[in-house]
Amino acid sequence: MFTGIIQEVGTVVSIPAGKLVIAAGAVLDGLEPGASIAINGVCLTATALGKGTFTADTVPETLRRSNLGRLRPGSRVNLERALRLNGELGGHLVQGHIDATGTVTSRRPDGPAVLMKFAAPPEVMANVVEKGFIAVDGTSLTVVDRDASSFSVSIIPLTQTLTILLDKQPGDTVNLETDIIGKYVAARLGGRSAGLTADFLRENGFPVT
Image 1 (cartoon, rainbow, N blue to C red):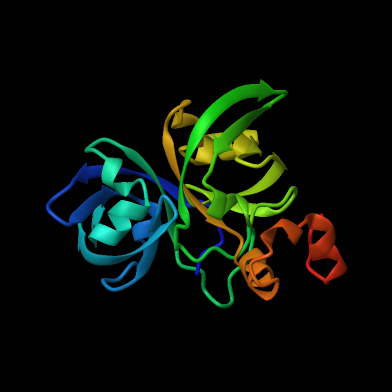
Image 2 (cartoon, one colour):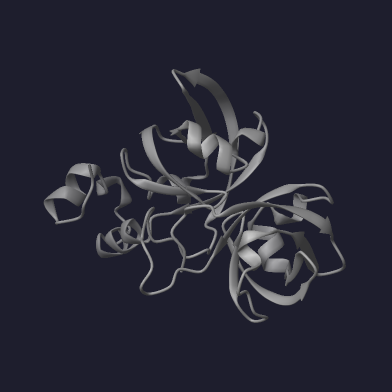
């Protein structure tokens, strides 16, 4: 389990068959083989450690469902270590299980922030609510607004600095994971996802601002 608070931006060193070798710094402190680490929001297992690097295995399902198959040596990636039970939940609960990929459709300045819009498939949009949470390449973000096929988020200056989101240009692919709480609510609705709104969540005791 993760929080969507990116701890470091790493760099892909090499891509052996079925593996990623990532150069990193801070996230390596205390990292042991077998530990979980999120790469662009995808929960993977650190299988080996090197000098300033770690290796993670990738499987075909991961490459099909995420943007990890598009990485190349030199690509920058968002990194987050798994949440400790006594740790601070600064973002929201993120499983590291990508629902689908989305596409950057636009980005524009909005004061000191950058407003980014993403197109997403119906199965993702069914669980996206205005002012709810969504993880984009593993980054916990608040949905500014949505329509039937897309949503917008505001990237504050600190997030611009500490993540790879501003590396993304219109047409680029991002990993998307919707809020697990929203998924359970949708399941209780019996698939009637059109009824999943911010008002519904508030009325049923969920902390939506």
